[in-house]
Each structure stands twice: as structure tokens, then as C-alpha cells.
Image (tube, rainbow, N blue to C red):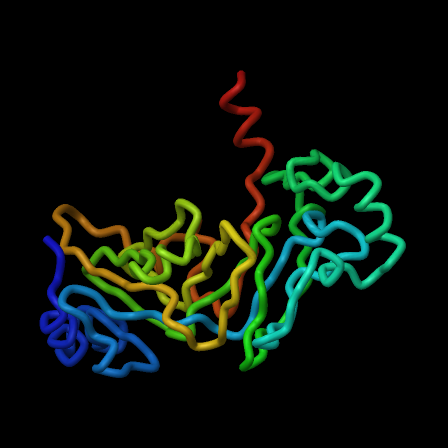
Length: 239
């Protein structure tokens, strides 16, 4: 059963002695009641973005500073003019479908990142690149199932704010990492509304995320790269 907006607010104000330090079931920081909807709370985009280095073609910017009124072209994506000329001649070398830009979920080397900060006037994201972002909000959830999704206006701008990973856990504490992808070159701004968080009740014995020794992301702050999937897990299943 999904919580309504007023019930979310009530759970935020109600101390629970069974939670760590007697905290409420829901914590959202910072919190602004104007962002509370009928059955969700609006989340905002933080300033930091991370990009896996292996997915960035040489000579290209991961994103472009946005200046309203300026006319952009493909040339603007390149900080290295010789790379731009190579792109003109051999576009397949810069195609994100090219296996040279692969990510290996079991290899730490392919998960090294570069970071950029979104200026107040915004950046243009490339549809050829996946970005790790984060919410401004830090949340803690106990005795409930939290999950995030995009706002309708975000979806109608073809911004995907999570890539299958919008579900959280009872006991999760931290900012939410966003797996951002756009269909077109699209401007994003710091603190823009990027999604919504929902809460559902569940039945059964609890296994809180913050008490699970195998959890990877509890307490995360800022955009957090993927934890490496141990190769032995794959090998065990193939035997």
C-alpha cells in the first residue's frame, strides 16, 4: 500500500523507538513541504556528475556549458580539433555502440570515473553518454519500501533518471545515485526537480539494508559508481 503525501509527512514527524536513535520511519533532508505531492515527494538534482572514463571518446567534452541563445554544433563537443576532424572522417570511432567504449561489470579498471560540476546556468548532456548523478536530498527509510521515479515533465523531456535501479530498501540511508540518460542533447540545471520518491508498506520479517553486510551503497553521498560484480559469482553459476 502506497503512502499518501500527508502520511509521508506524518511518518517524518513520528519518532519510532525501534529505529536507530529513535528516528522517524522517514527522513528527508533538506525538506520543503511545497515539494510534497499527493503520494510522493519531489527530489532535486545535485551539482556533481560522474562519467566512466572508458565511455568518453578522446578529444570530446563529457558535457557542454549551456549559454542560452548560443547556436551549437557538433564541433562544440570537441576540445581537440584533430579529434573533430577524425570524427568527420571516421564517425564510427566515436559511436557509443563501438565496443571500444565497453563497460565490464566485473572489472574495476573500466569503472574509473571523471567528475564535473553543473554550473548554475546548466550543462548540455549528450545522448551518447551515460551520467551518474545524485539527489540533493539525503534520505533514511525504516519499515517502508522506498523507490524513485521520474516526474512527468522530466519524462516528457526524455530524461531517464534511473536505469532499472529506482528501487531502494528498508534501512537505506544516503543520497540517491541517478543513472541519467537523455534521448536528445538536453540541458539540466543544479537543483532542478529530477524525480519523485514514493513509499510503500510491506509484510514479512525485515532485513534492513543498513544491517546487511553485503550491501554496497549504504551511506553513499554524491554520485557513486557501480560496485564491481565478483567474477567468481559468475564462474560459480557456470559450473
